[in-house]
Length: 214
Figure 1 (tube, rainbow, N blue to C red):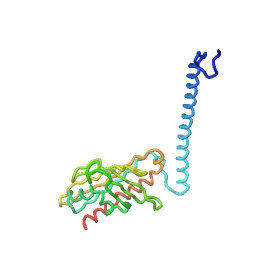
Figure 2 (tube, rainbow, N blue to C red):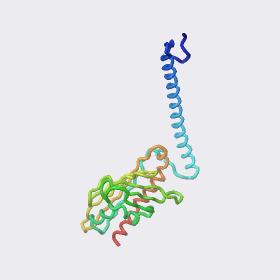
Figure 3 (tube, helix red, strand yellow):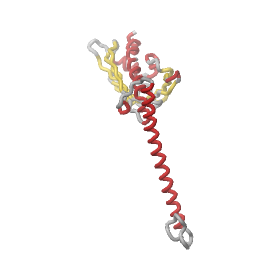
Figure 4 (cartoon, rainbow, N blue to C red):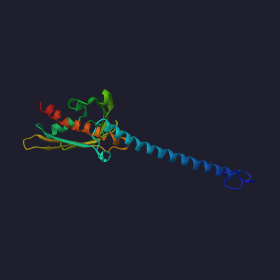
């Protein structure tokens, strides 16, 4: 019996070869459709980037030609008239965040031991348009009186942060606070806004200084 169009040859008595050929053809068509969709999505991303840039220029927002390739980062240092032990204990306890970071609307210990590696603090932060957004973070490194590292694990932007402490000659503490973020996908288009937010966050170190010295 002649083979069916799209099959793999002459049909066996049980029709096995024809069925395998049809399945192969269907798989080939499915792969072609998937590839076409992926290409369309990539094209949409490029088109959206161009649209976003045009809108920014139209609104008078400076746009650096290399801005999509930059990694937002911010850092600030202060000297506090408290010992490194006191300063470290304060920043390691995430429940103190509301005392010096105005953007924190609520915070709680979600899991782990307070101030220890693995501890996760659930935060609600002030977001665009007065809406609240998630800002949960996890402590990833903790060296008492010396350094504390964390990573944000919830929210639209998820930077990594580091507190570095060293004693001063007069018994105080030189404290540095740094943030770094590597945006991916569409978040690259928000680099300017993210940079502004991170600059504002590290500047709050002045508030931390005032709280600890009062």
